[in-house]
Length: 322
Ligand SMILES: C[S@@+](CC[C@H](N)C(=O)[O-])C[C@H]1O[C@@H](n2cnc3c(N)ncnc32)[C@H](O)[C@@H]1O
Image (tube, rainbow, N blue to C red; front, top):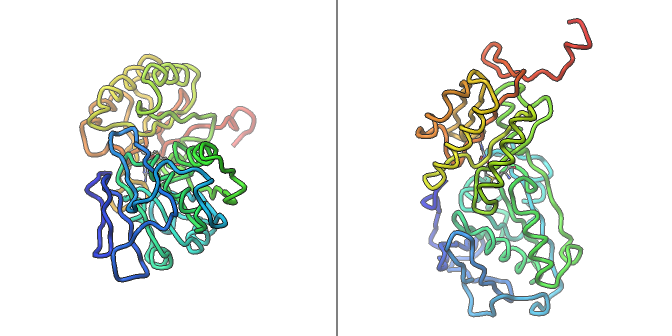
């Protein structure tokens, strides 16, 4: 994932943070239709100034139109065939689609062509992007805000509700709906075999919103308690040390031979799948296999590899003969 992924066309309007509004219905450059605009800063240092001269930090009282709808749609792992039928239907109904550039780029043409406007921002614009989606809905449009996997897994469903509340609006006012998608842990688990069949937890190594000491203590607890662990946001140049620390903690509680499944870009063109041992994991942090589009699944004490598949027993073997 990188900010270089931005796709721009001749009808795109670049904002100060690299946000792009694509008017898919007209010839000229587009402007925001919000009726109000936002000035949120993301936690990554970039800020968005909507492509209008309208007010910033809008509240519900700044909008005169009857509100439209806001739907948070999970795309699943990436390719159109990994999207649910309901997600596809909701996206085809949306007038405006708002999302991180990489995910907007992953949308099938039938969806991008049916929307009147696409609004995308590069990585780290999640607060401004979510606020933009809300402003457009409050201004009367039917808006879909998209993300990979599921909107409830390290994603924007919660942020959307928090921002709606902070604007003095309500979820009902915009008929807020969450359309689930297949989360990365599950699509990656499917590529690996059956590693998640017993109790499992997900932990994100991103310390952008959760402090590293909290992440560390969660990792200790999960590894000690014998959960299968899905690790999200495992590695970035800035997060190299978090990955090393994570490998250290896992090695304190698990055997060096514990199977670890690594899936890079599940369902995308650059998909890679590997099953390795825990003792090999740290070195892989410096390879293309482990980056921000990778999910790592660390087996529990009973997980084994059979015929190239990771298997975590559910416990049937202790109750039944087969
Ligand atoms: C901000 S989280 C979003 C998670 C997403 N909402 C979900 O339900 O999967 C981003 C992380 O999800 C994981 N991820 C997203 N898409 C993936 C894919 N196609 N293959 C593997 N991991 C993926 C990576 O760990 C990435 O760093």
